[in-house]
Image (tube, rainbow, N blue to C red; front, side, top):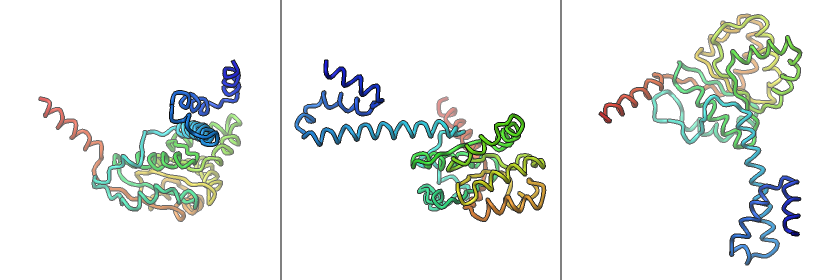
Length: 253
């Protein structure tokens, strides 16, 4: 009876990890030989790990990654001008502590989005808040925020994001309102937070995408000069996957 009351109190306090630890100790003879301090230490470890795992799950869910990518699955054998040493170094996340940016450029299909999501996934594992969004949708949401009064709340939320992943930059030329709002976002993040940008457009042509030379200079000054630039090349990896499937199909026959 006493134990049931204790269990109910632990459930009320949401000590789910500790409850799991107690159940495991009850079913293990080895734990019975431990001292009180050792058993208590194990219970604290269970609770700590359970809370950390829940926080990680929340960060991954809120990041809204386009792809379930991770550093361990990155293909370095495919010829696309990806420097293995540099990318693995970025995986240590020091660039986030230094509030630097990363720019992936290259043709469609070379894995820009996947690599960005892989770095974002590693950032989540390291405890950072990450958000992925395609640039067209991002700009649309900013414009909607200006219209319905949610803009300030949106900007405040962005200021809490340690790594903002902006995918598919440069698909369309920015309007006057869009470039002004994009500058505000980059200004708020400059030397405070980190941003990953992927684009099919070479950085040297970004002035044309932005449209206004003065605002373009201001935006690029806050992104490019404080960034690691990875310029990918090569044939689309989607073609490689198609060839692999075709080969498997012939083997099955």
